[in-house]
Image (cartoon, rainbow, N blue to C red; front, side):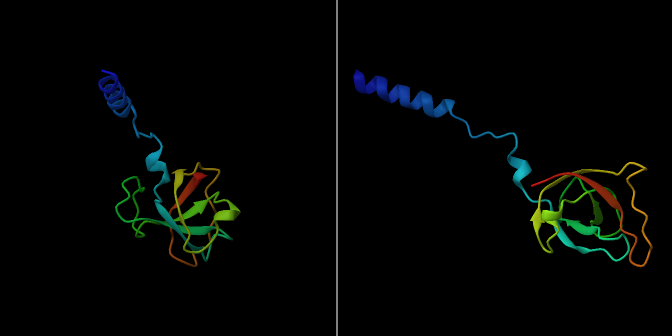
Amino acid sequence: MKTFFLTFFSFFMLLSCSNNDDNSDSLINNATVLRVGMDCDNTYLIKFVDGYSNTPQNSTQNTFYAINLPEEYKIENLEIHIDFRLPNENEILNCTSQDISYPQIYIENVE
């Protein structure tokens, strides 16, 4: 009877444990830091990975100027996960148009 109880208890505990992590998607890299852009001061370009569904509409092969990218992430070819939004009117960079006119996104968080 003791073995039955231990087996039942172990089985119950195994079923009650869950690996569901609401933040598990936040660990998946969704962008790569490319390089400093040519016409927006020292602002870096980032490219979203193919298939990332939350990419803003663009015609630049998912490449954007990353406003507010922290210094420690300004490393070419670094794969990152970002939370972002479209910039407010007062956050939009004044670029010189020497390069392709990449759209801009405002970085809120980087992992």
